[in-house]
Image: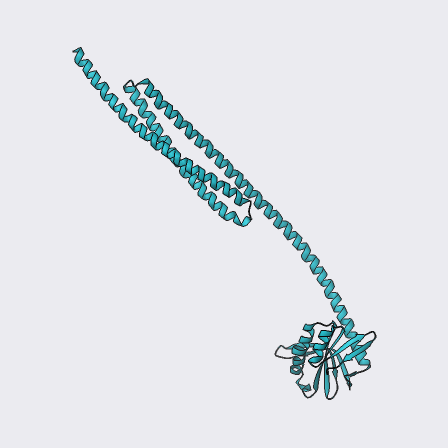
Length: 316
């Protein structure tokens, strides 16, 4: 009987050993899977760090790149969340393995060396997981620094924008003031020139050898169609009239305006004078020789001040 009982115990131990070996094989497979996942995590982490390095470099570029930076950070965060989920699964597998080992140890006496080896592997695995957790913490810390840097860039940009707007407001105010001053000076000069030529021609109403009966200053015309025009000086007799444009300093645009606009508009506004021969003149204190020759070649008389005398240049 003792022999049969001993044989039965041996058979039971053999079955238990077989079960333990099977569980060890499963554990080895789990460990390989864990190692593969760790290798994948290392690759993922390397990719994350590479992206973070690129992100920091991009943050130092122009602020227009900000949108693309945050898009990359979103992808990085998603990748990290995926890795964290995989680590949770690894931890759950290890917890299940630990429970299986504890249950097996309670039913049978396993070899002490083998048990020690298994626990050693579990300790190493747990250390790796802790290292990954520390690595994750450092990644999030780096992301926080990047976000702080982005906030600083945004704040600096807003501050610079505010300073720029203040500076532009001051500049606009100065430009407006200068424009008003220059505009006033221009109007004053124009009035002085008009008064000079009006008084001079009124005293002696002869131009291009033609005597005139009347002179008008700032002569205005209106039409129901909306056409309006003001003529600086107008000389008139029974047969001829002179439309005179007065400028302190004559420019090409003044000549073109006289020929293409003032002359034709006078005919439209005063059809009652259509039988009068119309002449055009440009009166100025300053005019360059090129513009003077252009005016004369187009039939425009040029009046130019020379000291206290009006010098008349007639078209050829």
